[in-house]
Image (cartoon, rainbow over all chains, first blue to last red; front, side, top):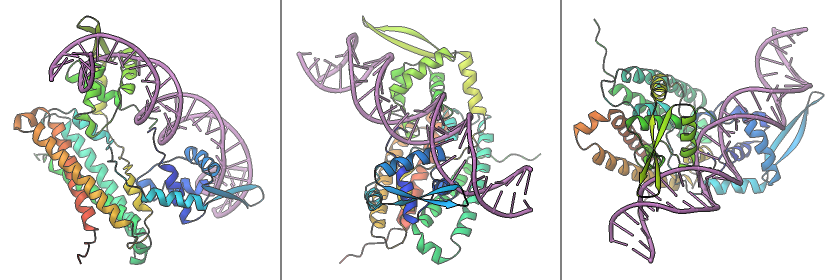
Length: 182
Length: 182
DNA sequence: ATGGCCATGTAAACTGTTACATGATTAA
DNA sequence: TTAATCATGTAACAGTTTACATGGCCAT
């Protein structure tokens, strides 16, 4: 998407929680953020440089051992304001699905196309697996009420993602024709 | 996304239905395809040229009036095979949400954050509107069973999109705190 | 000592959006 | 005649992915 850089706000939001290195931020996309946004370090490091140039963040060099210089980035007041302003803006854009399975389904013309049932089965497995993953995340991250109260938004979107997968699987199963056992 | 060009398969799929011009294809993204994929003519025309170079499509020039030369593109056997091969491949990738509202929610830390309820209300309106749009599309495009039988996959994904919006709205409403009337 | 992880960068290729640019046809 | 639509292209820019590239730290 050649458009408004949303990644910068994620970075600002993460740095608002605590100062972190580029490496730490990259790791965050493998964990909680990865559920709804992806980014590689090759995108993060240049963006950190840019955000520093625009005065939204600063860094301090920390030495680990003898030679390894880590850059701990933190928000400036301007960066914090930018984050708050973004969250306060309306979000009037609908999500494009960009789901390759959906794309392929569009070109299946009839209900008796022999490709349909295997496609549905494959997607059921995929989304059941994802559902299990999300449920496990919920169990581990939000084991107690205190965790929910401190990261309420995160709790909400995980809850949303779980329901979404549950409904997706239910929908797929509805169009699955039971195989006749011989 | 700097990755496997999915747009080419949509174009192949559309040309598999009938020969069309670049303009016709562009229009398709304003109509049915637009629900789940976007593309502008500036992306379509160069891609048509590329697909012709790789032997997946050919074109014939048709004259409309005195001067206007239209290029009617059609699939070659190779292009058709490429389409069939793509549909037959597994689709093991999960969709990233890329939903800006979800992104913002992540940074709402507590349930009593004053920004939360207005955000939910805004999204309810947005998704209710989208739901109405999709229901209207379903009524008009799939008014009779024959239409469903001839474009079953399209029917399925529209059905899926409708359920998705219904559940989204239900989920949003669950976390909406009723405003007290004075 | 070596493999896994920590840590930071750059380069190339590609996808996608917005803007620039032009002209023909058709219906009111 | 004029506005809407048909019709085709290019250019510039921004975001994203994959690959290239390097080196330190730490536990076994």
